[in-house]
Length: 74
Image: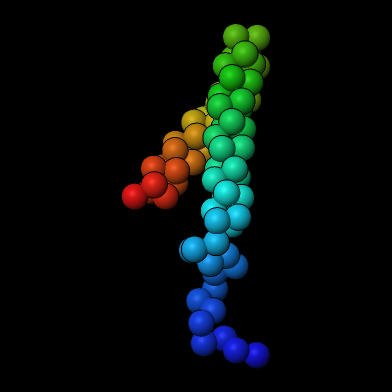
């Protein structure tokens, strides 16, 4: 098995299909993070105390994905 060129990356940097899949995954994660924020906000309005944590996790996920998307475009 030739592992000389394999640096642990499943997808080569020049692979357009791999880049499209990665970008789609980031967009899906961003939408999921925003959905968590909205679910948490509606839960807080309804008076559910654990909803605060749902909103916090949504914010953390959204910020992390936004940073990942921003760093990919450089």
